[in-house]
Length: 363
Image (cartoon, rainbow, N blue to C red):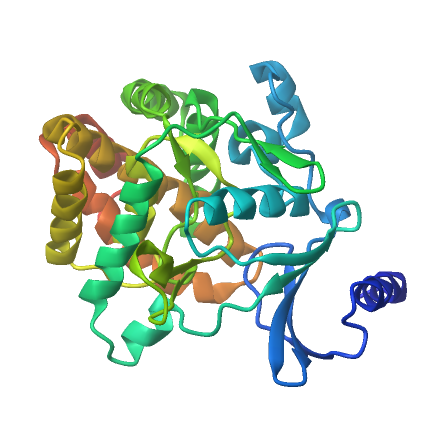
């Protein structure tokens, strides 16, 4: 960390009234954010550092496809860029609906700094690994989805102090570019030849209807990274507020199946087919107006698209950058992908993977 950045952080904390707090660095992930826990007497808080210069430009509202592609991956496919403004505005939206996003106690948008409520250490992934029954946790997480999907979100999220952030749509272009990262990164990781023009043309033709359906169904607030390492269990609260929400700053308007694919096909922990089916049943029972067959078809197709994205952009790319632990997640993600491809409606995609990525190149 540069001395200039550290000086900026210390000045921010002093101005916000946390200058005397003891700072404890927390373990990070693959993002450009850094988190610390602040200790002030018996109180604890979270200090978020999101250096703006480490992210490429976010998608400007109303930008055309050519402009987005020219601006880079964040603008074209991710649509977000880890902005503190996005976090602040999204937290306000979630809290206004009775959900447990952390309260933002201080922030500096331009500097990329914020002090947050500390929701504790009860991560779903940790609690389940320690033996806690996973079913009530997943039921509550599904109920959060039901609550969020009960209304159409605004085009712009706002918070006190004039903070705002556009809620962009996870559209066909974003879905395509994200899924296409499998074509770029998997051959490099697996040591196989690059996909030729025929394979790419078949890929585009097979996935295009999936991406179009994803955009057509984009109607609800979507966390975007909704899984057991971003959810906290808060048993002292009631109802949907028992689920603490983290890392939602990449939120978009997307298909209602999207967050469920992350939750129920979690790349970092096994979710059994039985639990997945039970939670889909719970969600659909709570939303009887939803066409079950159409929803499940979209869920399987979008989950397959997401698995391909994760295998390419996230896991293969990170492994090639030297983060070898991502390789341990790959077999699970392949199992999810293969499970989705058993859907007869995805037979063409199954045949594509069988032809161009045979078992010896899936690991």
